[in-house]
Length: 146
Image 1 (tube, one colour):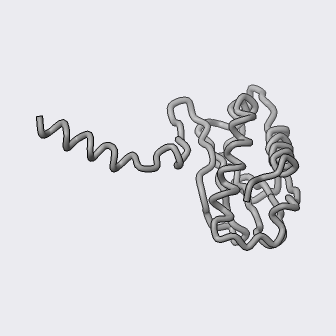
Image 2: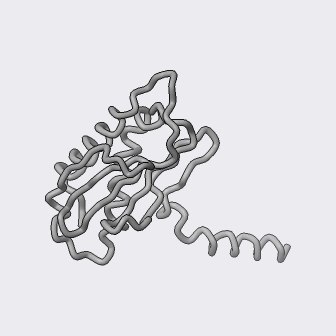
């Protein structure tokens, strides 16, 4: 499932609405995560703070009744891309660092870490890391043979 332009715009709008709840100021909120909960049946995207207080919600029509087995993997990539596009905004929220954006299913179960905001920590896209173990093992074997 490739996200439509409309879907990407809806995700970006939802992220901006979350950011509006934490405008940059001197007093940072004590929070560790922003929970993005997505329902595969209804297509709803909801954002919550640590106290389960709703920050925003929208319905992504493309996600309604989506039965794909890799649904959460695909949307995690799309949401992560939308967060990165708004990196400047996301990294300047009035929330004490470190804080993160996490993806949850409609049962509030953790699905994926989407983005961590911290001065010292960076989460690399899992697709970028694919096959790294094999490459490092091959490199180490060649190095030790010499």
